[in-house]
Image (tube, rainbow, N blue to C red; front, side, top):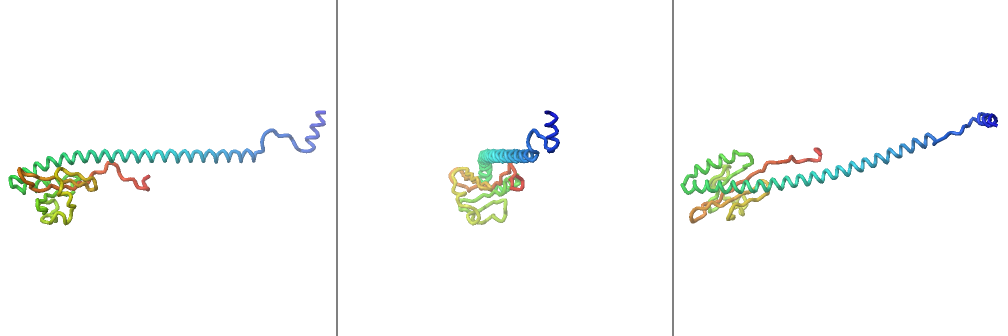
Amino acid sequence: MLTEQNSKDQGTGQRLKPGLNPMVKLYGLIILLIIGGGYLAYRNWQINSRFEQEIATFRSAIQQNQLANDRQQLTFGMKTFVWAVRNALLQNKPGEVSEYFNTLVKDRGVKEVLLVDPAGRVTISTNKKNQGILFTDRFPAYLLQQQDVYFNDKTPYELSAPVTGPNKRLGTLVMLYTPAQVLPQLTSQNQ
């Protein structure tokens, strides 16, 4: 009986094969690879999105800390600088004030320093083009109206402080300061 069955199988040329057809296996493998690749692409997108959010939060925190630090340091520096300018003005030494300004403007970030008299004219400036002009012709008037050290965080920073004598206002000290960048600006090409 066994021989008869073997001869029948050989006669028809068909053998019983265990398992799946190779084409079904190939398509199944391709489908699994596509699903796996899709999942990896989705996870990559999620991770990149989360990373970009964390970078944005990090940048914002750094910028806020820099602004707070700049405000504190520049306000304190402006107070002390006003005392030096006040002392030179009370001793009627405008050349000394000009020396202070020229020394200060050499420091990184200091864009321009001006001394404005009570009438609103620029008496001393690190930019000689501005000397003698009416301050409000080129600069905002609110800088002259401050009663204490004023700090505006627009770029460049605007600082102003009244220079007061024993019984009157001697003028206003104005400084324009460009802050140093802590982090470089990222463009879409750098990302």
